[in-house]
Length: 127
Image (tube, rainbow, N blue to C red):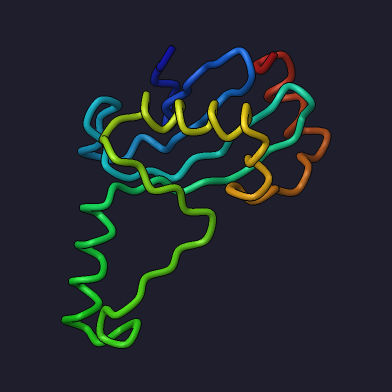
């Protein structure tokens, strides 16, 4: 289930909650890139950036014009998950598969634990 909650979209799943900033012009069904924080029932959090191949190509073409990354000859982004199709549903499906396959730790960086106040803010929202 995808809901808009203030400045974030929340994607709820039995195994995780994913929060994606509600960037102007990006809609859940058509977003071709997104930054996400993934919250797990045990209190841990991970981070991911999603992009389609078209977004990667545009970024590399931009680097070719500016001269960055050896004139667009390479591309890097930490915690990047490349998706074939647009939309938050596909992003959530990728996270679900990474959890099931055991590769979530390899794909998504671990974030620092929340402090007590932050923990209280999200207590009971996941799980």
